[in-house]
Length: 301
Image (cartoon, rainbow, N blue to C red):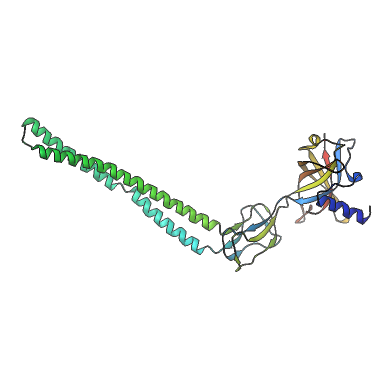
């Protein structure tokens, strides 16, 4: 096959167009579909953005660094956010102290007990000697007891309001903590840093990309299959073996699984099939790389 034909095949795969009829896989006696001229693509390629505007005070990674999900990649100045958190915590603690203070409730209960005892005593006196205690005094002490009873409810209500205030301040603490976390730029998944777009000391705006991370431990392979040879249902979720040519004539195989079969049939009754395969390293370098050409064997049986 000459170089012009090879270039045409690669462009067809990249643009989603059909390959020439003779380049599509055909079933083998072993019950496999052989798909030539497949291409390797990334599954995840993310330019991690800044979630808050500010000055970068730290950039902890370089190109080609391997990072785990959640690793800190860069830090935006968070001094003001830290102060806001401290203030919110102090207000929360003060509100919680008021909410835990039941002195007013206990005093109101004791006041009610005193008012009730005085009224009971006067009523007992009048039962023994009618008219000793004037009715005006009886009514006044009944009012005092009722006021003391209502004061218990009022004190309990004040405690509930104080607790709600403490809860509001706790929400303010959580908001301050989130504000701090949004100034940390973390790895969204396990991958490789391939570009550091901003340097320490630079200003970044909200949404501005800072670090580019790609996933290399798992890649996808796309190819086209002749619809006259296999139905999509025969290949859905099937295991695949992907073969690539490396330096010095070496051939390496990688295993994976069909994850997508396009419902759109293209010219010549061909449809796109996609598999995800596990990558591996050799001497610290990934063996399978995006952009490589590959041959895919789908285990139809």
